Length: 423
Image (tube, rainbow, N blue to C red; front, side, top):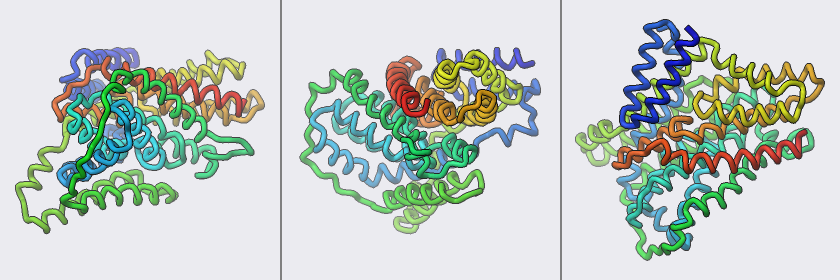
């Protein structure tokens, strides 16, 4: 049955690449086959879904329409256009801005807050938004490993290795993983300068200043950020805490808007406009990943990585980093990291060395690998969904030609830094 699960999993990804307009149907169909065949027992299906991410996505999407209608993204766009000398630097600044935010709150929430600004800029400049939104998505995903609160995998490492918030900056007398991630982020700047080099010929200037019509959606967006940061420091909180924060903030914003204008049709329109296709695509992928995890495929991949590395620390570190990049491009990094952490601890114990070099390498590779494909991370899926809603269909290569060089630059920077500081 494990072989069947692997074949179906590969077939699903081939389908996702070949038929991008049918991604949701393909993922849900394979998930249904998994449950019919018993690859994923029906009684376990509910528990393998990351409801926290789905609630965050759904909740924030409810507020995004109000946020866009308020004209606040247009105002932020006006301010950025005054700073940036040309279109290329607009894209770079937007990417760095999203990366900074995502170091402290969830990547999906970051994308849904920043992408509307990117879309507003592209509409003002009358340019295709695909490159900018993909850059925002991969940058949001990139810096999740920078702090304890930036990504689920960071939280997992902190709990497993008993690391607190400051340990991600300075640990055991050495610079910690934050700096590895930031070096990688800085290395993406020349990558973006090359990828978007043609855009430096188009100067930008915005003399207009958009008037914001409603500040409540922006206040609720800021509430998202503040509450998510506060929640990240609460130990042993419910697993859906972040999702409930996003959902409640959005519902409060919607209720306020309804009380203000009594426009029931607008509420109905906002609910109808939610990108349900992206929500159900994520649901299908969670179920499929849960199935192959249940079959022990993740465990097998972890064993293969450690087996290839052997007892040589340099080889093991290299395999952990780059193997994690390759695997997390297709497999959810949460069960993968959860599986490999104790494996790496056992290996380093047998070698008589500290495990932190391999822990940080695992986090670096597993977090960044999702940037290679449009379905490698929830953040990417949400970004592609927003573009589809705007009428832009993103093909596999459209994403990969930005995601792959981003990933290579960031991982190489982190890889070299971690080896020099922590070997």
